[in-house]
Amino acid sequence: NQKIVETPTASELAQMRQSRLLDLEKEHIKLHGKCNTPMNPTDLCEIPIEHRGDRIERQYGGETKALETFNSFLSHRGANYSYGISSPNTSWTTGSRLSPYLTWGNISLRYVIVATREKQEELRAAQKKKSGSNPVKNNPWLRSLASFQSRMHWRSHFIQKLEAQPSLECQDQCLAFSNLRRQPGDFNQQYYDAWCEGRTGFPFVDACMRCLIRCGWVNFRMRAMLVSFATYNLWLDWKKIAGHLARVFLDYEPGIHYPQLQMQAGTTGINAMRVYNVTKQGKDQDPNGIFIRNFCPELKDVPMEYIHEPCNMPLNVQRKVGVRIGGSGGNRYCITDAMASSCSDLGINEKSECDVTFYPSPIVDEKKTAKAAKDKLSAVRKQESTKQEAAQVYLKHGSRRSPGMKDRDGVMPKALSSTVKRVKLDTGQMSLVSSWKNVSQEQSMEPEAAEVEENCKSKLIICLDDEGNDSIDDISATSVDQKVSVEGLRSQTGTAENGCSQSSIASLHTRNSDYSVKESDSKEWSCKACTFLNEKPLALVCSMCGTLRD
Image (cartoon, rainbow, N blue to C red; front, side, top):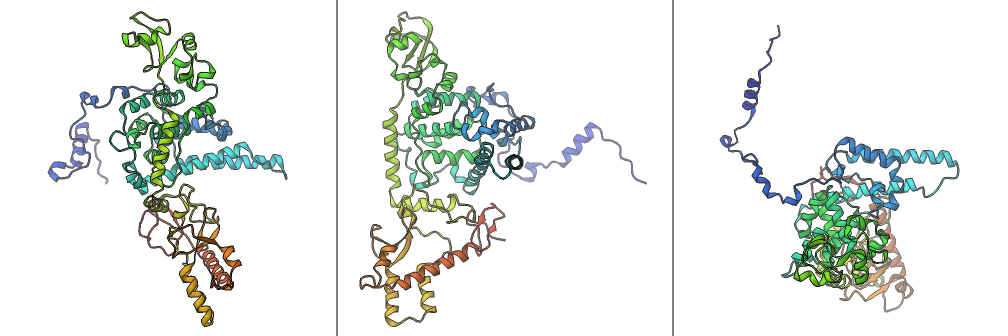
């Protein structure tokens, strides 16, 4: 008795679909970013003409290509991953090359991690079977895969940073650096254009940028070097260069892009300054100039001794190899009065169009600009307000050691001074005064001993010095230099000057240690919003994202 329904026609299907759609104007529903009119061909004028074409040498997408790339990495290419990812010559094959596929969703991060773990277990089993009771140490395959897994972790770590603080896209992580590179006259349009087009006069920098423009990919170290050169040597704001790099990166991922830009630019407050010597990087990572000659063809005939610094090439050598150092770079030029003097050195005197290869001179002095940038950042970093703000940044974004290791709250980086180490971290650890109170409650002390305790309470506080050793500070003093070591104070106990008994200090250390052990053994809980592992068992909110605990 079932009712037979005829197959609807095309017009009936269209009518059924239309009946299910909402009339946004009638229902007064406003959608953010809704396109009210179809896109016309004339709207393409908004896209710069240089970005409309495709890049022939780029990686091609799709799940099939992603799996092929990953399988080749696990089968043979990944063996030298740890050794080959720093050079732009070897990283094309030794690197995983999965970043575009992960970014565009052609392959999942979970699958990559699980498959890598299975490969590691397979290698360990084969090694154990082969070596028996004498396991081989420092297996290159296992070391490379462990390094790869670590980078997968850091990838998620940086994405989580932007998730936890979306403002990193438009403002400095440590606001104390907000005025740097943003004063009148700081931004140089000519420097920016030369950097974007790969004609700065520094061959290794230019080769890396041209590689990105042609292929959409270059290894991480070279990307960091490009940002360092732009933000330190050219003194360009990281916000200004973010858009260009996002366009040329085939694997552009906002969560990695903006935190890394700020880290390389030195505006995080918790990382050391990363100022690359681009000439030295070229000599280290491309000693034979193979990468430079590939992406800077105007330098293909330059002798080896001048390939990294062609500005030092004598005129007779320039004439011999057919390249003129100085100019805007390129292959064909119309010889004018302004260029006649330069061309005459090469034996070209006629004002006509001819084949002349030019390469620009360095647009800045590398050493002087690097030193000037370091001085400016150091001046800001030394301010007390910067140190205090950097400490807060560390509490939110600082890396933490894995459970089971000492100092589970993380170690303050060396970029921060010992003054910042004295900022009290909200770890729930028992304070010194509380420890003294417990000692006084459990022990029946004589009046003279109680007076000693009160004197010690007002004068002593335990902290960590620059080397991470226990020391005692006089909290009534204004200078952090008035420190006396714990061992030095213990050796002088019993004198009228110190007024503290050795047994009291020993009892205090025992109390604090017991409490720390008890605290570290407490149960951790994971936030359901951001999955951060919180180490405070009684905390009501997540210390990372502030979400209420269920």
